Image: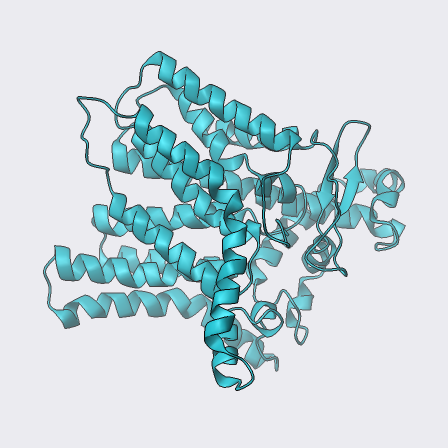
Length: 430
C-alpha cells in the first residue's frame, strides 16, 4: 500500500504541475468542428479541455447511450461503465454541495450543459480523471515489475527510481490529456503491458489455466480502448515461440495453446457484440466506420480510382511526421547506454530482442491504423524509456551519474511544462 500511495503522489505531483503550464497558443483540435477549450482555474492555473470530453462525460452520465444505434463510443463500453460507476459514487458523496457547485462552475461549459446539471457532469468529470490517475499508477506498477523481472531489484536508490518514473509519465500527452476526459493515458500503459506480457510467457513459466485467465483479462482491455488489439499478435507469437522453440514441442502442440488463448482473448468482445445483437443493435465502431482505421487498406486496394502503393507512401510520410515526439526518449536511451557502461557489467544488451520486436510491432500496428497523430505515435516512447531504465539498473551507478540523470529528467519536465514539443505533424497531439 505504501508503494501505491507513493505512486499516486508521483502522478498527482506531476499532473498538478501541468496546471501551471502557459495557456496553449492554439485551440486547434483534430478538425474545425472540434476545437480545444482552455479552462482557466485562476490567474496562474488552467488546462485544455478536449472537444471529446463532453461526449465522454455524457456517456458516463447516461451509459444507456451504449445501446443507441451507431453510438460513437459503443466499442468502448467498459471505459464508460467504469467512469459511470466512479462518477455516480462521487455525485452521491458530494450531494450536499450540488447547489454551490452549479453556481461556481456553471460558466465552465458555456451553453453545452444546463446549469442545474453542472454538478452531475463535474462528478463524472472527476470520475474520468480518476481513471486517468489509475491508468498512470498502474503504468508505474508495471514499469517497476518489468525492471524487477529483467534486472532484479533497484540498485540505485528510490529517488533515482522515482525520477525514471517521472520521465515515463511527464510528457506532452499527459500534459495535454490528463485533465480532460479522454483515453490517451492508455498509450502509456499499452506498450508496458506488451513488454510485461512477453516477460510473463517467455521468462516466467505459466500454466495453461493461468494463460487463459490472463488472456481473458487482457481481452477485457479491448473493451476499454481499441489499441489493446495489439496484444493479440503478441499473444499468438509469444505462446507459439515458447512452445515451439523453447519447450521444443511439435507444430500442432505449439499452435493449440496459441489458438485457445486467442479465442479466450476475443471472447469479451464477441460477448459484447452478442449482447448488442440480442438487443437488436448492430455493433458500431466509430474508428473503422468514420476514420476507416485499418479498413483504408482494403478501400485502397478495391477502389480502381485509388492507387494503393501511392496512398501507402503518402500515409507513411504523414506517419513519419509524427515521430518528433519520440526524439527525446531516443536521445535518453543513447545517453543511458553510455552512462551504464561498466567494465564489470555484461556488455550484451539484456532482452534486446523482446524490445525490438515490440517496437516493430507497435510501429507497424500504428502505421496500418491509417490515422496519424503525435498522441498515437507516443506509444513508442515508453519502450525507449523502459529499456533505458533496464540499462541503468544493470549495476550500481556512481553518485555523480545518478545525480546527472536526475537533473536531466527534471530539466526535461520543466521544458515540457513551459514549452510545446517539436513537431512536424499537422494534427499535432490531437
